[in-house]
Image (tube, rainbow, N blue to C red; front, side, top):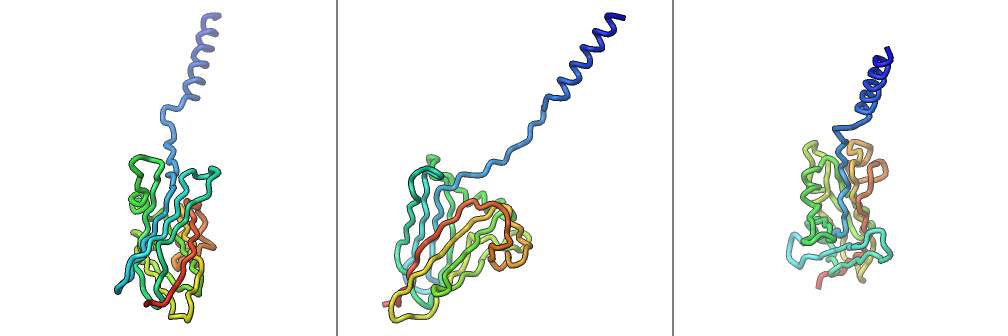
Length: 193
């Protein structure tokens, strides 16, 4: 009887310990590190492309992001926009853009453009016909007597609710999800010479 009690105790201990072990660990889908957001605006008719770049190589570190705009936009012009997203802490730099394309249902760029600059419309869709924003059109407004400056904020959301009110039109208010990166650019519209 004593041996039976010890045997049952051993079996119980083994059962409890094996139940606590996890042979199938959860797969953790880590967020990619995004250091750089590069936007290229190419006029549909004539002129040179403009590049906007936001680069934050130390993430939450002490250094401020480096933001650059390669030139002024022309008034009353339609630009084809494209976005490239990189992790430049890797060598060579990791292109996150391809991952966003592959997981297009889980990502959306949102654009907040000062109304005195113009408007933006999406030019790409995921498999559910919801916007992504890697490709877009930006239309600047009519000529001014003097150059006009304003802000363009580009925000990438991970797992937004693409069916929420206004989200398909680019309104971030009800989008939810997590912000992967948000960049603010100061852009200037000048009359073509």
